[in-house]
Image 1 (cartoon, rainbow, N blue to C red):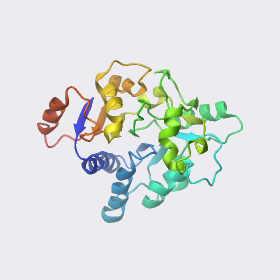
Image 2 (cartoon, rainbow, N blue to C red):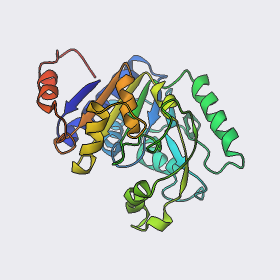
Image 3 (tube, helix red, strand yellow):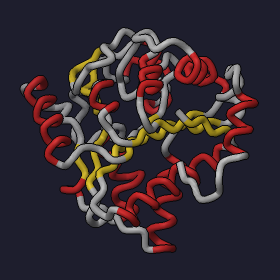
Image 4 (cartoon, rainbow, N blue to C red):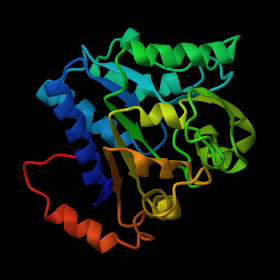
Length: 260
């Protein structure tokens, strides 16, 4: 696992660099798309590069991490709409090239199985963007999730709903109680994981993710077992890291030709 500590704006550039390098090398790459606050600057940077440098998403595929259950299709915070608004429409990504779990399906377990098959049929995810919750969840894999889990229905914790209330006018009662999410096993099948975290409120989760034991109590800690995981954090999110100085040193001494 590589840990990079830098200002938030620089982190977004680094993540965008990795995605651009992948798309230039493999135009039909499969990208894993996250929502929430963490990837927004990355999407801004990718949109800028699309406009100013011709970065193309025309052949690429995108798969979303998760979706709320039973939000109306036109709801502003339905994740399919968020992804369309924040990245897909800005880079002229055809709607049929971007897929998400069907949170409105009549048969949710069947929809989850179909989503797993769709990811496999596309060849698997090449690069998965991630954020981390204050309780250590990635995707919507709440504490206690199986480290081998696949796409499935989950009940959201009160903490996660409270954290997400800001997207629903601050009213936690408006945040759905259920979601469909890629499982930890699904996420771990991606070839490169890139997680971004900023702010003091993420410090304990980042500490457990990077330096704690691998445990279902901190689901993101499963990333320690991944052969190519990159954790991008600002100083505040890195404030609980015991080896913070070492991570800064190793990144400063990294060969200039080596990407993430």
